[in-house]
Image 1 (cartoon, rainbow, N blue to C red):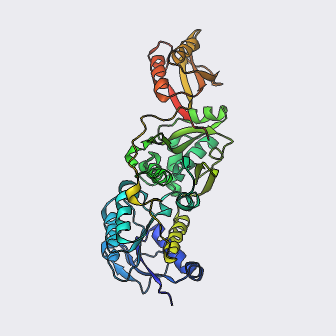
Image 2: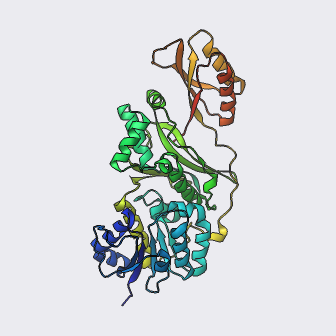
Image 3: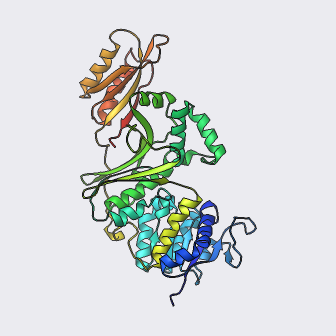
Amino acid sequence: MTEPLRIGLAGLGTVGAGVARLLAANADLIAARAGREVRVVAVSARDRAKDRGVDLAGLAWEEDPVALAGRADVDLLVEAMGGESGPAKAATEAALARGAHVVTANKALLAHHGAALAAAAERAGAELRFEAAVAGGIPCVKALGEGLAGNRVARVMGVLNGTCNYILTRMEAEGLAYADVLADAQRLGYAEADPSFDVGGTDAAHKLALLAALAFGTRVDFDGVMTEGIDKLSLADIAHAAELGFRIKLLGVARMQGEALEQRMRPCLVPAASPFGKLEGVTNMVVVEGDAVGRIVMEGPGAGGGPTASAIVADVIDIARGAHSPAFGVPAALLRAAPRAESGAPAAYYIRLALADRPGALGRVAAALGAVGVSIHRMVQSADEAEGGEATVLIVTHETTRERLDSALAVVAASDVSMGAPVAIRIEPV
């Protein structure tokens, strides 16, 4: 009879407790699909007395997650603590060092130490799996590493933070200011008391760095992700984008430019009728473009105890079946250290200008853009009534580089027709 797979569970917060509940509730189904029993034998958490909604009686407890990782009766460590270093990193390294498998939902840990941990797993003959680290319940890691393994990926894109998408959706739908929606998201539990990790784009950038490594066989390069959050977005730009047939999303994009890797996590305009444009609320979406398969769109819940536990348990079942695969799709020694792209690929841009409402102002703008080769696709004066001699002008350019655009806008901003700092947001073709 096949021996059970024995789990050590490090962390019993929303995710860890969700894993324990799912393994208990679907034990028979999981055993049938895994070909063996999957059993939690030990846990590590700070508060033994806390009610987590799951029966933990009879399980061994360890105050120190590193001690949990070192237990001889733990075949696989589920790391559900979080954090790029500290106990999460130490416990993961301890488990891999003795040949125990690791399943983690920790995108920060992998974004900073993914290549080293993948190499450690291979040296020990252990598995390192992280489906739950990217986009919650969407099986995008498995899709890139297995289902699309025969494709050369041209581009991978994602709306990877539900908090940001929730905030942008409500700002547009209800005409609410960023600060008001953020406060409501905190009240509902969608945003943390300190939301900077989410709204500043860091959380989503961690995830994009992992997707890029999987898609292009490169080393994880989180520091190479050009990152900008949503905290500086104006309600006016969200409304004006809608007037032009677009919506604003915090969109991650990764692609190769020759041998260089471009990674961006920034607010972008996307066509309202596109899959990203239709995405509402806390939902995530990942889009992969492959040479053989074309475009694949994956949509689903990006966070929460249930979806994240679902992804973790899927990885556990794979390991219980005896599946073997490199963490990032190819052996760690073959992951390339790709140079960083110096700039983003050319694109169209949305521009909002506050101009003096007098003859010749638009001509000055057109001349500044034309002088550096930026051509105008559309130019309209907003329906907003001009006040105090100021008019709002919206421009959509043809494809250009951000460097050319910035040089032209610097000229406009310094001119006597400018009444405020120009705003420029990339339009991503999706």
